[in-house]
Length: 280
Image (cartoon, rainbow, N blue to C red; front, side, top):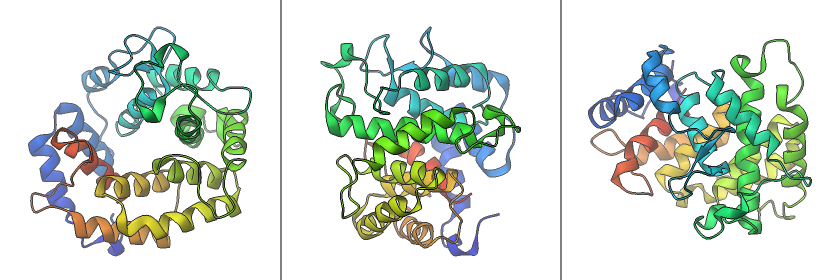
C-alpha cells in the first residue's frame, strides 16, 4: 500500500504507461513491484541472457568483458523480478565481490579503458568512487535479501559483510568535510545507502543533507533512482528526504503517466519503473 504522503503520484497512470510502452520483462517487473507476483520462468531467463562465463554481464560498449557498471544495472532489473537468489544473480554478486580491490574499491577491467564512458573509466578516481558505491550498494542489498544471503545470516551486510564493510570504509574515507563526494551525483545516494546499512550514520547524514539541497534541481530520473535506492535499504517511507523526493516526482509526472529519462525516450519506462519502486 502506498503511503498517503505520495498519494498525489498517479500510480495507476504510471502502471498504464509501463503496460503500454514496456516489453514483457518490464511488465513483469512492474507486476512484481506492485503485487509481488512471481514472473514466468521464461521472463527471468530472458532478463538473465548474456552473462559472462565467470559471472556478471558485459556492457554494450565493452564487448565480452564483464562490467561492474553493467552488472549492477542488470542486478537492478533482476531485483525487480525477485530473482537475486537465482544462479545468474548469485554468480554475478560473487563476481562483484571477487573484483574488490585491496583498498576496498572497484574499477572496470583495464582492457575497457578505450571504450568505457566517463563514469566507468578504469584509473579515473571519480569513476572508481561511483563504481565502489554502486557495487557496494548491490552487495548490501544482497545481504538484506533472504533469497540471496539466507535467513540465518544476521551480520551487517549479510553474506557479503566483509566486502561491504570494505566498500563503506573506502567511500567514507573520501568524503569531504561538507558532506560532498568526489564523483558523480548518483554516487551520493548509493554511498548514503551503503553507509546507512553499515551504521555509519553521521557520514550518511552528511551526504543526505547535500542531496536534500540538490533535490530541487535534480532530474526526475535522478530523483526516482535516489528514492528507490534509499527505500531498498529500508529507509522509512516517512523519512523527510523520501517525502520530498516523492513530492518532486508528483510534480514531474507527465500526463501519460510516465517520467522522462535523462537518456532519451527509450529509457522512459526504466525511469517510470524506478518511480514505482520508490513508492513501495
